[in-house]
Image (cartoon, rainbow, N blue to C red; front, side):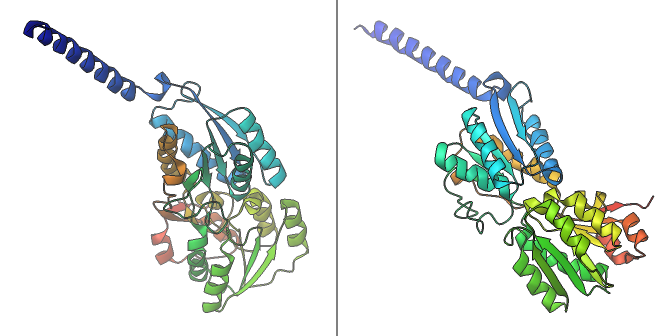
Length: 335
């Protein structure tokens, strides 16, 4: 081969190489809608966790995952039955979704079991408190398997919620605490903190929202009682019931997300669920781009909020101290 021929060959090779590199970079820079439509199956506990789903969709939209173009959502709602949730997860697997999003402990466990049995590599994105204690993942920093997500962290802040109750209602004597999942509900931390503040905790396990209404209808409330909504799937689904019963018995209701304050809680402390969804969208995008869920750390909320409802407080004759109001992130005025 002559020197001239060699130079020409090298030049052609270089041009082809540059073209291939440019094409690869162009494909990487394409928006998701130009590449593939992903199908995401969503298992939702219900009303109280819906803001998380809305935040996720908004966050993914901002990243180019336009609904109807780059992504399609299949939603199964009001899943507080383990059997129904597992059946819904199995249906998503049969439909060959690219990802399952599970909002709440019941859907999360259902997605875990269904994928272990039928699709071990199908990514699952969960939103659940105490994912380690509930045996969903191995650790927060390295979940392992096919699961990652975000956690409201309720098991870590439930004691702080009790402290805020005492500051808001100094006359409080008992915390009435129906729950379904003791780990997700942070029951041990609640009892420990309450004991240090000389508060009695009356806790009882509830299987269904209907059972909650029956139990609270028969319960004898007394002065100094505060009703607190637990942070698990059953009590999330029963949020309207517990709000109704609190109002009927004129008992202050304490919630665990900003949405609870809009439903009548005097005070709520916890993650802003819409913001938690926005935060989670970043992790979902990592999965859709091929990231290994088991290597993506589960994230706690970037911030927690205090929300107060002045109307609910006024109805019960509760005067919220100015110092407490100054610390509140969300204040719902009385009508």
